[in-house]
Amino acid sequence: MRPRIAVFAYNEVGYVCLEELLRRKADVTAVFTHDDDPDEEVWFRSVRGLAAREGIACFTPPRLGGEWTERIAALRPELILSFYYRSLLGPEILALPRLGAFNIHGSLLPRYRGRACINWAILNGESETGATLHEMVARADAGRIVDREAVAIGPDETAHDVFLKVAEAARTLVARNLDALEAGTASLAEQDETQATLFGRRGPEDGRIDWALPARAIHNLVRAVTHPYPGAFTFARGRKLFVWKTAVTEEEGIGDGGTVVSLSPFVVAADGGSLEILSAQFDGGPERPGPEIAAALRRGERLGSENE
Image 1 (tube, rainbow, N blue to C red):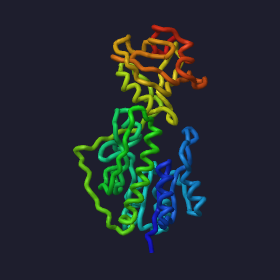
Image 2: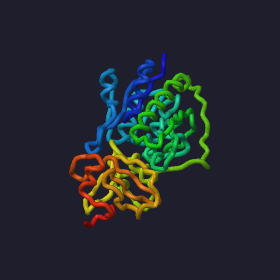
Image 3: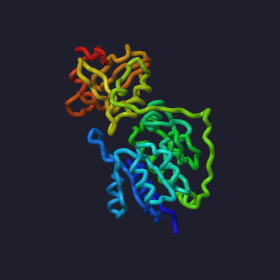
Image 4: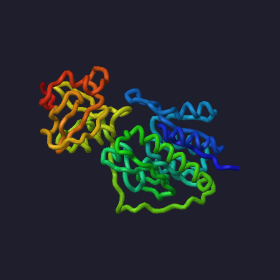
């Protein structure tokens, strides 16, 4: 008889990993997920919907602990698997399954522990990230590693593009390691704490463009927070301007950072280079191609000031 598995899952990674468990006929006894946030753009498939279609008991506790620890214990899980669940599982829950508790994190641990790991990797100009299957301990993302799967980050790929690749890497980890996890024979390797990096949550306010940065750094910010995330932004004539897509140009040394160099194409100077704005949107208006946005501006003016 296969071990009973309690799954804690959300987002696209949660969906594909649960889908893989079901494809492999794992004994998923219950699924724990989250209610969707009405203030968040929900672009990913529903874990709750998948559980409902498969007739699996699904719960959305607002927080874990207390009564919920008792309810989880009553399920007698022998293995706990977490796939992009947004809350930490406390030590009382982690101690329940005889085969342990394991999580998938969206980076190549020990680098990029913490929140928004894919967004941070793109923001920092990384050319590679991936998914890591690791043991869950009291400290987030710090447990021993079972397995990792790398994915490349292209120079113009967005966080959404990379997230989909990381989700498939996570599926691969589930497929490759489920037998060992169920048998209790998975090998565990300590993380190298000297290589660990930790990054925090990002909010919409962190998308503000600093035109003193190099063009490539601004481009990385744009692609790290573009749709379905809140977006990078600046100000033009006192109006908030969301910048959704950019390209780094070949021109160098053409003006102070934030200066509008050209209207068609819509090119803005950055530190030592320039950036073509391919798609943008004034706050409250529709998203438009860069030259259509630039029609409201003039060559030589500077972006960035909240004052007209």
